[in-house]
Image 1 (cartoon, rainbow, N blue to C red):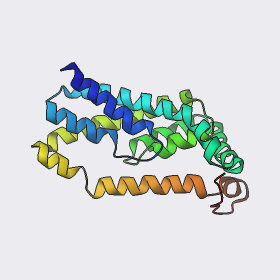
Image 2 (tube, rainbow, N blue to C red):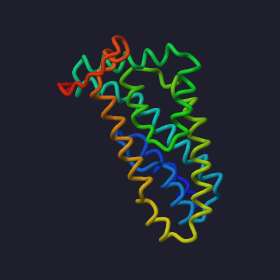
Image 3 (cartoon, rainbow, N blue to C red):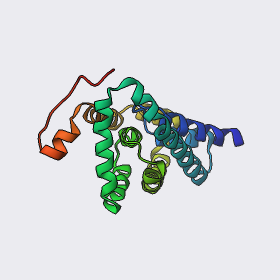
Length: 197
């Protein structure tokens, strides 16, 4: 039985450590909770812990990866965006918290934080609170809605999951191709596609 909880941890970790949007960790948490009839509160806390560790590691390795694949000007652009977020103090924390509560992939948030070389302790606390609240609601609703495993599996690919994936890809597009310095310093919207080394 312990291996099933380990599977919850590994699944949540795996979808949150990669630098591109995947289905949210709570979908796997709900699926495993229903399949194995696991304790729902243990699934929530173990799954959130896996997500936090995955996002923490993403924040640590993405600066090295972004330095290899993006031009220095793109990295400087995103670093400027991160610096602006840090300057906001508690307002920046509120932005992270509110974003974590929304049904949007948090991958772009952590990629931006990592590329901006923000310390994980600046992002993780607000993300933890938002993730704990949103995943608790999602897993409880998922358990309530899941009458059987087949309906849950068919429900994983629906308009909400597709919309979340598209929104995550659009946010990554905005993060990478918008010239954030021009927008924030000079109030000029510019797209730059020549960002790769």
